Length: 95
Image (cartoon, rainbow, N blue to C red; front, side):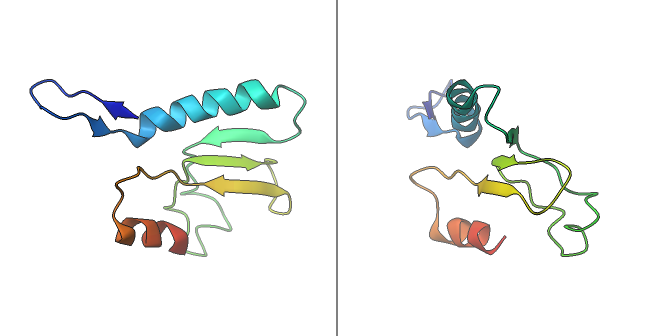
């Protein structure tokens, strides 16, 4: 989402604002009976499995999963603005 910045001529893309709206829209569409939980910026720093795999510092923008296990995760989403640098996108794919 492009947001105007006071004192700046051009608006800038703000990934977090977009993610909040996407989270809201997904909650509206999936409702309460979807069967998966939707989390935003889920912190896995103390996760016993992911921290050992050096993934504990990763924080996906959105995570659709069933809490409490590792066998029934649906999707991990990372959002990037249209003007993201290729190296930033590659870095997210590696994570």
